[in-house]
Amino acid sequence: MGLTNFPNGVASFGIPILPKLEDVTTGEVFFVQSTTGSNGNSGTDKDHPFADLTYALSKCSAGAGDRIYCMPSHAETISASGDLTLNVAGAEIIGIGRGAYRPTITYDTADTAILLITGASTRLRNFILTANYADVAMAVDVDAVDVSIEGCSFLETATSMNFFSCIGTDDTNNAADGLTIIGNERISVDAAALAFISILANISRLTVIGNFDSQSSAANIGHFIIMGAFVCLHTKIIGNTLILNGDNSAQTVGIFATGSSTTSTGVMAYNLEGSLDTTTELFDTATLDFMHFNNYHVGTIATSGKLWPAADA
Image (cartoon, rainbow, N blue to C red; front, side, top):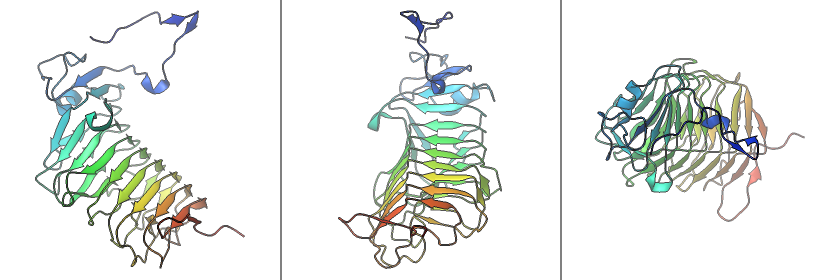
């Protein structure tokens, strides 16, 4: 059954039923399903879906607000950098389904396999991204402005198959301005895992809200986000949780975040970090100059966290 259009709207007791703004699009709508679809189909309804995301993107127009729905249990495989590139500006790629029935992107056969986002204002939502190879350098490389990654899960098929980093920016300054990362999760049991987010160039308007990262890495790094010496302006890092299950007793840098810029601006607030480090207990690099509000660190199991850094006197 396809989409039904009601040109005059729908009313209930004289009151129009209005969709949420995020559900409204003036662009084309396409459906994709790898097992039941065909690229010979129209792709315009769930009964005639395309077979793969790359073909669906080829039918989209830049800046038109086109939307692609990947149906439950849809599967894509990335074996090399560029195998899948989200390259249409303004396109939304939305997964349908809950839990294991969400569309899945599997990384295999090479540690250089990567999902590239080069289309400005791309939105990726509700996917499972699974490492099926050891030490995949990065799951998603963002090389476009105003990209949004929402509600995705970064998982492993085994302890020896992992992502080093899940989301990273291009190394060109301001190429990823406006990057928004909301409501994602990483579940990692491999000891080689590195930062969930890697900022690799100057960036403005970075928004990181409500993400969950559980990992077993003992690396001496910022485990949730690393920013290097890059300037991050108008940054919002709010309401995220990092849980470290590895041996982090030798940590000497910020556990949640690291960076050496002294000209970054923004806020780091209401974040939680738990580890097994009772020695250094450094939530983030001391020189990071974000405003801090109610961030908590705990270094032992079964105790409540303490405010970090210390409150302003």
